[in-house]
Image (cartoon, rainbow, N blue to C red):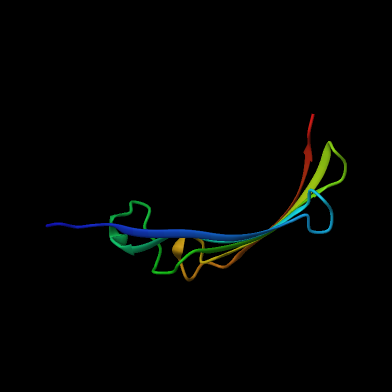
Length: 100
């Protein structure tokens, strides 16, 4: 018996350099990390219930000085682990970047 597992994934994004200030970068990204098309039953941890996990990210790198920048980001993840019944996940963070 010839069984197969088929998956697909993709990512698209947009970048907006120098938005608001020279050196700044606004980014929008859409990701499908892994959609199981065929062979869900062969995944040891299960392959979800047929849902497709989707991720959307918005982030902004903003330099404050030559050595310090902040980078806030916001993520939305729907159908975590490819389960339609899982609630969406919303994550916000604020990162500081130091250059020496």
